[in-house]
Length: 275
Image 1 (cartoon, rainbow, N blue to C red):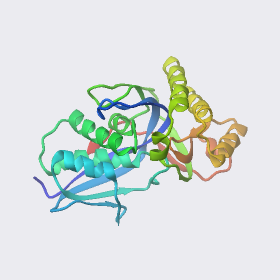
Image 2 (cartoon, rainbow, N blue to C red):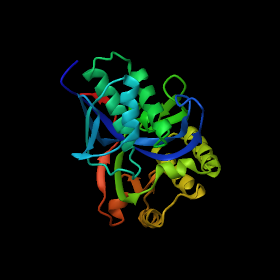
Image 3 (spheres, one colour):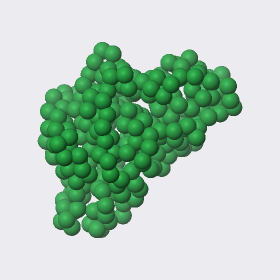
Image 4 (cartoon, one colour):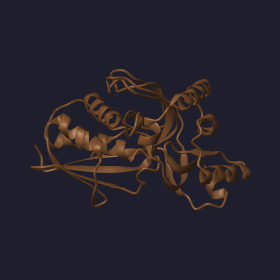
């Protein structure tokens, strides 16, 4: 056991997805595609007599984090730092779950493998209703395509082999729990169509196009994101909505060209790591 350990987990913007529930949370999840971000979450775990979770120095209740520590049978102080907004489609809860698993494994000398830790974090997210595919994507990095749902023992991942300059503007939050708890039939059908397009043409342009069609067909587009997408289209750019958040993202300079003041980052070439 060491005094503390820190893991970095990239942010993750999902462009589209289909929901695939299962009684076994390690088999449940989503198919879809997204992009991991160089901006992410640093998670530090320190052994303690009881568990306390902080995000940017404020205490916070993040259910997947508690589930991860319970699965590892440990208690500790979990301190997460990020510039990414919470609840806006950047996979922060998934990053905190995965970062906690990786850092706690080192801090408490649990000696579990990467796949075992990803499985624990993925299952914690699914059981908490806070995400279906962020954890496995954040473990891979790049621009991952989730061909089959579930944790590492069950899923199948591919990727678009291209780096990306990413711009985004976040207008606010969308409740992931509410969307996933509702009827997801229309959403999942739109997600299957989008995945088929990207599998047939695994390019960044195809990904953004499929993501935009998904957001529209799934009925998830917010008014502010729709307006921003149209503004980007007017300057010959491509943009879409981050799932699930009131956030618009674009590759290249689409949002800048449209007169917005976006956050600029890049795709992250690798998955989560212990520092």
